[in-house]
Image (cartoon, rainbow, N blue to C red):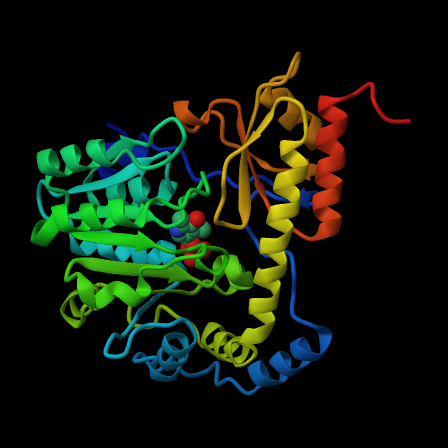
Length: 366
Ligand SMILES: *Cc1c(COP(=O)(O)O)cnc(C)c1O
């Protein structure tokens, strides 16, 4: 046996590394980033604030001031605390590791966020995927049956869901949370909360097994890597034990605190993106052969069944015009012929629409 075969777990060797497309020079609509930056004035002030940070010191590992500011700004209920992660990806990893008892299982609807299954695999947990219905809403009966059969330690519900944009029915989710009961936790992943009309954060006190997870990534701070999660004090205390003690660096901490002092800016950007989602959705729905799924997130999922043009061909045409979206058609059979497009500025949305129109209607125009 080779060195690699001797030391690396077979399920890790079987994986391919997470592929991120090179986006240099593209209109980048593939990763749900907020296209807006802070104003030059705020960036100058941020620079001055960061210059004061003691980079020679370890972070103070309680992160008390950052946590207090996150709780105050994002509606964490009184009496509840948060645990911080280097992005919610790290929170998912921490929960997976803490729950990885022999034979423990993780359950989530599919198609869903890929890190749920990946993190489960890394931690040695079995992953059970439950397909959504054809309209990409939750299959409650199938979820309840899978919960009864597998008694998962962790059940994920992304609210709204990625890559579909669907806001699952809240009453269905409550039934699922109750069905899981004290045999597992239900993680409601609200990565897209700034773009959604509803949240479970205010309902934490209703359910002992509910954990609400969020991130500042889709809000405009993907680069600083900061996620937070809230649940009962007893659950958080256990998950905090597997958190690397200095997982949030001092620059992230200072930058997040600064931006939260100017939270109105982020709120305005999110409102602009919600308005653009509506406009872009209407424009897309008017194109021949394009179906737009309802979205409560900062992206739109579309299915392309156009005459003489596959979704793969449209994706290639967009690439040729330097527009990068996400081709999700191979991710799951329910997503056949689907593309996922991040909602961006009016200018970038117009570039995308022009490229898509040229692909679908090559003979029209001047
Ligand atoms: C983007 C995303 C995350 C990850 O966010 P990070 O904080 O950037 O790690 C988590 N969950 C869902 C559903 C997402 O789409």
